[in-house]
Image (tube, helix red, strand yellow):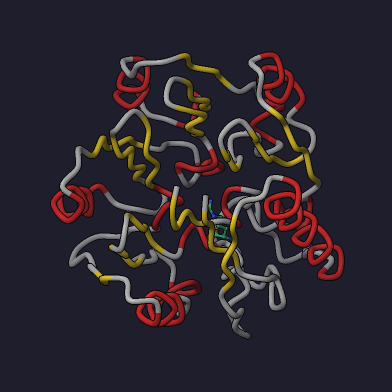
Length: 263
Ligand code: ARG
């Protein structure tokens, strides 16, 4: 597994673009740095996965959430088209990073698309969230570029504004999700997918349990999603809980802080 991360040198809550962000509840930046370092150490030292870094940029406090840099498959890089102007400034920096490493840039021409934050593979299908951030209009082009089946899933709860905060592929035959985050059609579609389905309790959801980094049998997630964490342990996963409280103040957790470059 090879991931992209961005150190939190300029991380902050400087605007409010999701219900978790409050200008009167800003992160402690030193604590955030320690939490990010701990996450990085778990992924690299403890689990042995590879991490590449992109240089953080002043004035782009959400750039730490590299899951929204775009979507990578093989040597193809599809840049994000952010809904909010506050994050649009990240795009040229991510584009340059991928261009310098000889990725083929395949931009979308229509709609909003917030990268892997709203597009996750499971059982050979690309599941793509839309509503609060990405728009369904981007999905046909996404399918065409990647030559893959895309299953569009409507997100209806503002707290779960990206697919990766309410859905987690846990392996070839198991996924976890927050049913109330999805519309009726999406709930039907999810129930129709193969494999074991774990639903997150309100408590698990509140602690961003679904926003987990899955590396084989190792799963990294924020502390406090206790029943989810127990369910994973019961199924033989090695669960690594790590406190990401400062990033939750921006509406993100472990998974948002990483982008898959290679499985
Ligand atoms: N503050 C960021 C935003 O609202 C958090 C992004 C979290 N990323 C994710 N993939 N869920 O855009």
